Length: 237
Image (cartoon, rainbow, N blue to C red):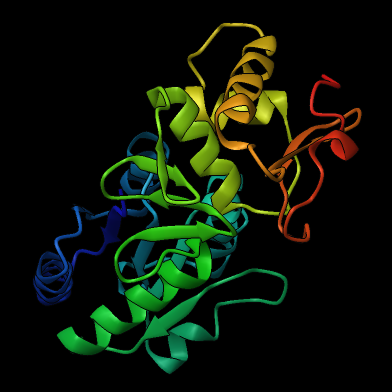
């Protein structure tokens, strides 16, 4: 689900941004303060954060937001900002795009779509393609080589998270936090069980998930087509 979080207290920006996202049938949530916006990032888990610097964000506050692990690891960032406000973006922090006010609806739609594509790999049909694996982010379905795979909700969420962060290793604890949530008190071996089940369902002719020794797991981003499963130690948990 490609959720868009808009943090702005400007009625014109909120109206224009909301209208643009509704044209693309994207779920939208609006918050008026940076504090409320960061709560929404953790609870609602948007794909893109649209942050209006006109709400009075300080340079230090902006840097803290852009370096927050919840943002860095999983959320695309689009700023609504003037040239002067953009000067607050310091070195070593990431933004994916920006748009200067007043907002043009068509330009805003294009920029959000670009951020989604660059950050998640999803095309206009909300499909995340990784070699023979296709994840439909709108319909919550997964297929391999054209055949639909039956995953549980947590298996789907775990696979989706890894695939949208292809190449990046995550510890079991990090995966528990991202997929199960901070209030989950189960053991980290829960991740191992779900990874094993996902592999059994999707890894028919090639591997998609790699075990990173002494760390955790990563989605394979650079494996050649037809990578041999036994070369990865799929059961080496």
